[in-house]
Length: 201
Image 1: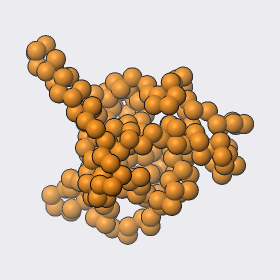
Image 2 (image 1 turned 180 degrees about the horizontal axis):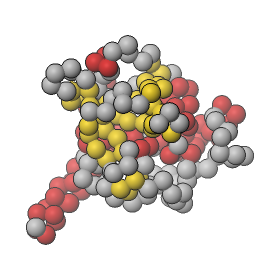
Image 3 (image 1 turned 90 degrees about the vertical axis):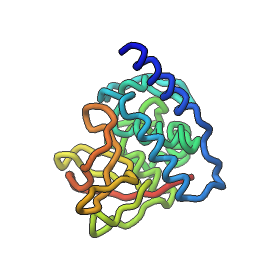
Image 4 (image 1 turned 180 degrees about the vertical axis):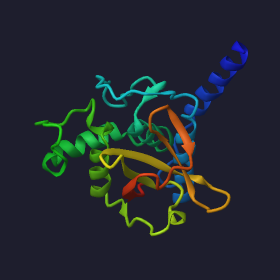
């Protein structure tokens, strides 16, 4: 068992170190790279932990064994496309702080937490002109889309739309962390959808 675990960790470490795709790569390739980077977090990120944590900057992260829904997205963009949402959101918030939600009572940008909040990522992606209409049918979502929703009608959540679909309805799976670590599952539409974004750098 220990040999298998060690081998698996070595494989995962090797996958995580793959070079990011250049910006000139085709959008479909970049979307699939984003999904693959999110999928590599399955079995690695095993817990949900929303605690405020001081992070290195740039490129800061909490230990990959834990995190929140935004960390799945942050890690996927960083690993696959060399896009550091921590640095990018921080820079944008410093330049246009008034454009971002004020619900946390902050008076200035905080590079430890701002990028880990769903409403901030929604604002950043909208400012990048990455917001798209929400499809009338769940089958209309595309692989690599970013989906936001409200869990229980109040808690913001974010996920990456997978390139895998249900056999019967053709509904895409999503990759996210909603409480028990990163998972890929048939959960698109379970909660009220609030946004669709597509940003590949």
